[in-house]
Image (tube, rainbow, N blue to C red; front, side, top):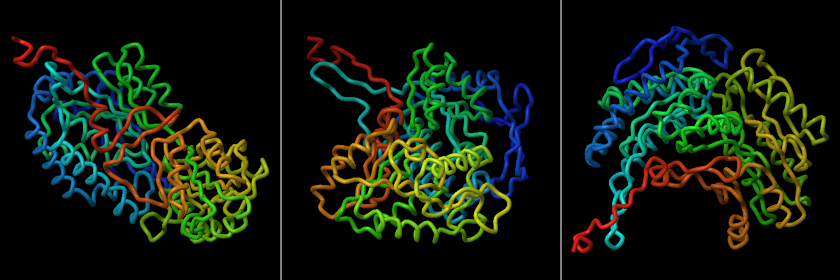
Length: 478
């Protein structure tokens, strides 16, 4: 049983202003596996004041000082790698293999990328007699979700530190353990007091207090579109910058000349990874209508071969994070059945042999139309919808016919056609033929998938203000 009843504020672990406990549930067992304190606006205020004070000096540190700091964080993270991975498995149900090969390693990836970018980043440039200076924005409020907990913390904290910002983090109350370990890592690495602060709690209380606090200069939020709208509303009266990475319903267009076993099977497996709890998952698979039967066969085999079970065992897929998510996914699967989509495999209820834990059957629907609920709503579970198309133009039109625009996918062997389709898709990232991730590639969305970009050098720019110093050069002085 993990007990984390303190917050990390101004370089120390402190008690909440008003004691209040929250249970943390292990989604594989449905049992309480720990407790955290639920913070309040008073705790946020303490953290913001510490961050404001620390910003005075931290914003003036040199590039070399911040590189050394990130290198110390990298060393401490490496020491705690196993602790991070096991915490993620316990708190949100990621299989141990996924936690060890992806969930925990991506933290190291963001730190290493941040160091590399910082070494070469151009904070100043001259344009004629004017000097353009990029300066840290100030105190950043960070609100992060539970689905890739360390990824979404690291991709905010690392560039904020690298650019000289200070911060207050509210991690998800559903997955707080890895965030506590992250704070311990930063403390051990010698991050100056007040530069990084952590307050646990709910979005309605702590998240809202961060978004509305006049001492917070920017909010960086990752989560649902619904919650992102509320954050933006709370931030509006203080006219602070709001960067948001929100939901997705990503199209996966498989062209007629694609390697179907690889493209269809890989697309299904991609969705099943992390139990479908990835905002950029390729959940809408578009295939030529004439090849629907072939796609169904491949998709069924890929889903049925996905093992589900104890995340500490050898299963490829663990549970979803909590009862609320499980109930939502069941409702949406039932909607797919009721609205006439072909249930290829999976369906409502737990997989056979699992009578406890928030496990969902790997589910595939076919003959889906884009007006069906399973094609429109972000399910955030292991559910693939296969839609047929008669022309590439139709595939692009259907692919773009969504309120989201976070990611998209295209597969085919004629690269000219693949590139042409990619250029027409309204999404922040387009992956071609199953290409893997790129730590330097900007990540963020069009439309209701958010605004701003994270990762790599694009992530740095989110945390910087731009100042023009006119008449800076000696020539102007003359």
